[in-house]
Amino acid sequence: MTGVLPPCIVNIGTGYSKIGFAGNKEPQFVFPSAIAVKETAKVGDEATRRLATGVEDLDFYIGDEALNATGCAAKYPVRHGVVEDWDLMEKFMEQCIFKYLRAEPEDHHFLLTEPPLNTPENREYTAEIMFESFNIPGLYIAVQAVLALSSSFSSKPSSTTGLVIDSGDGVTHIIPVADGYVIGSCIKHIPIAGRSITNFIQTLLREREIGIPPEQSLETAKAIKERYCYVCSGIAKEFNKYDTNLEKFIKTYKGINSVTKKTISR
Image (tube, rainbow, N blue to C red; front, side):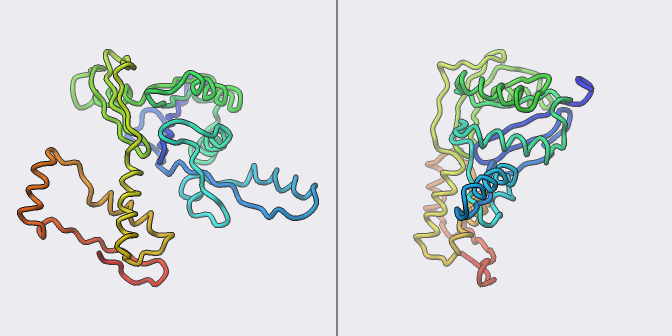
């Protein structure tokens, strides 16, 4: 079967993960890079606690299920583009492969993405998990910026030379690529990205005391960001537009309060 079935593509980011199969136009699944393990009460004798610990290893959720599960604390194994908890990452990959892709890892080659400043140790840990835990036949780990240039082949003449601005959920990179090779000494990065904007909007909503339930404030801030935020071409011109006619640019967000079921309008 090896070599017949399409390779699996896995892109695990700070905030969201995209997984699918090679040859498709878009990922099969896009979901938050969150994982949660069901909490158990620390009561009973030692044997009972050991049994509960064993069950916890099998009873966990990822993605939207992790965020919505009761009695669970959602955790993100990736922070600012770098894996911080390899045990959680292995569990996350297990769910991605078996539950979402429903693939036998022994029958598929895998293409994984990595940030441009990933360390050799992290790359080694990734390969160790994929080969020893999942027994895959082949693995290629590619820098996201190079893949971004490759994805533009269908819209313009092919070129693996360019400047890639990669702003995700946890970190923003500016990566120069020459003939498919990343120029590591020229990479610039800042730990500010989509999640920072979401947190900023969430703080503004909290300061204005709009009345959004605490458990709903993050999703509301995220919805406002995705609906109304944009990148301006010139910041001076942007301020001049607002100074000239501010009312023209005021937007109104409408949502439903999850507790009172009343409309939120601000």
